[in-house]
Structures are given as C-alpha cells and as structure tokens.
Image (cartoon, rainbow, N blue to C red; front, side, top):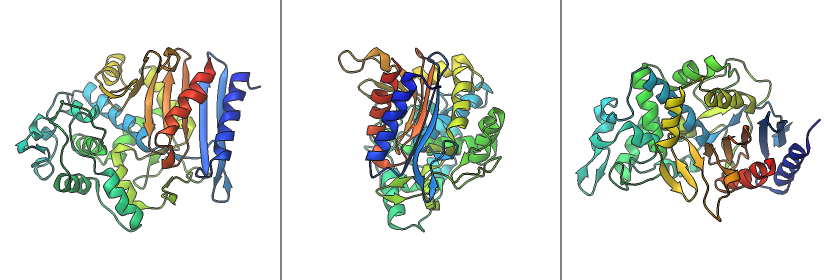
Length: 353
C-alpha cells in the first residue's frame, strides 16, 4: 500500500502530464527505503501503446554521467589521468586548431577534467546541427564530423579552465577518447563497463546498439519542437557520448544504487567527480557529469540538496542523501528543458518532507 507521500507525488505527476498537451508520455520512479516509497509509474501513450513503467526511455544528457563514470573507471585502471592533455588521446585531424581563441591555440592546454566539468571553453555545435536534423530527417553526421564541423564553424568562449560553458562537444570528445583507450566503439565500452556488470539488460545506446534482452515495450516517444525524434538516425551522431543512453527506470535505478554504494567507482573517485566542479548557475555546481544542487539562503533551501544529472527532454536521475531517495524520470519533450528540473525539486523532492 502506497504511503501518503508517494500518493501525493504520484497525483501531482499524473496531473502535470495530463494537463500539458506538449507531453505525450512521462515516467517517474521514486525509491526510498528510508521513507518507505517504491513508486514506479508512467502516464500517457507512445502511439497506440499506453505508457508503461518498464518502457525504455531516451534519457538525453543523463547519459553524460555514464560517460564520466567510464572515464572514472579508466582513471582507476591507470589508463587515463584527469590532468592529461586531451591531445594525448586524439588524432591530429581532431586536435589541429581545435581551440583557437583570440588568435592563440589553446588546444594542448585542454585537460581531460576540462571536458568533464565543462570548463574547456569549446563551443557547442549541438543546437545548430539539431536544426539541420529537424529540417532534414535524412541528415546524418558522425561524432567526429560533428566536432570538426564545430571547430570550423564556431568560436571558443574562453581559454581552458577560465570559465564555464555547457557543451556537448566536450562529451563527444570524451567518447572519442574512450574509444581510443579501449579500442572499442563507445557503445561497446558502455556495455562492457556498465550495462553488463550491473545487469542493465534492457539498456542500450540510441541507434548504436541493442539491449541484451529485447523489451516487450517500444521505446517511449520523445520530441523536439513537436517533432517525434525516435527514428531520426542522424540525431544519434549529435548525441553520442553526450547523452545516447536508452533505458527503463528500473535499469537506471540499478546504476544509481551501484554508483552511490561505490560498486562502479571507488568513493575517492566519486568524490573527485562530484567536487572538481564549476558553477553552473546559482545553487548548482557541475562536476564530472554531475549536477549538485546546493543551499542558497532564501533561494534554495537545504532540503533540496541532492546530486545527479539532467537532460534537455526533462530527463532526470538524482540521489537525495538525506532521504536516501532515488529520483528518476522523464517528460520526453524539449519544452521541459528548464521546467523539468524545477518540477523535480518542487513537486518530488519537496514532497519527501
């Protein structure tokens, strides 16, 4: 029997989805043994199929935490250091004039950690190239080509380590670095280091791989500007290691439980990933693929303190230490780029108290 807190969270979630015409389907898992909550629900439809909590969901930039975690594993194996120059792992075509700012080439000064915590200064190709995908469903581009396109058409924002700028370019490069080190495609490394060891049998990478066990349910529809994106294969080249993970909420819970209990990376490594951070915005620090929501007097109360990762389609995967609560879900629409995070804080975390 659901407790009152779970009932309140579920009621608010279903009402939010039902009243928002832009949202076709949405998913929410809240798990807290401390609070006696084990909620896993879905609302809406994928085509003619009613939304089901076991459906695989495209999780957008939530995938960045998976990428950062793989780099953390390679760090523990002694195969990479966070202070290494990225030129150590990239071919000359990629690294040549990658970061030229005000006439100075800073490429060799970009460290692995600058990619991880979004302080490289590199420009973000994502939104410009997304327009091309939205205009032409047949448009395709490889991850390497996307980085080169950005290098040739966009300008860096600042020298490495001298500011903060969220960009998928950083995580594209991390994916290519993982491929260089492991000698495997990124999707294979994702499976080898995370999916298989954790038994995430229904998880995979959008348009790159298949799950170990085929789900009886279709991938949930997700949309940008009202356009269903599931079958736009060119989109996968933009997302890649910056957010290509597709998984049901129960698989994502396996990952977060393993991460918080130091089964994936050691405690010391996770602390580096959380705390080697830059200011994203007021009350939010950005570590290695990790958003930390922190107290801001009169603005962000202590009860919201949590950490995790967020994606443009209103996808979120957070852990709340005080309540030992895991919060995982997605609204599957880019109109939730900002308001999905607010919703999580005000209508999920706040209701745990």
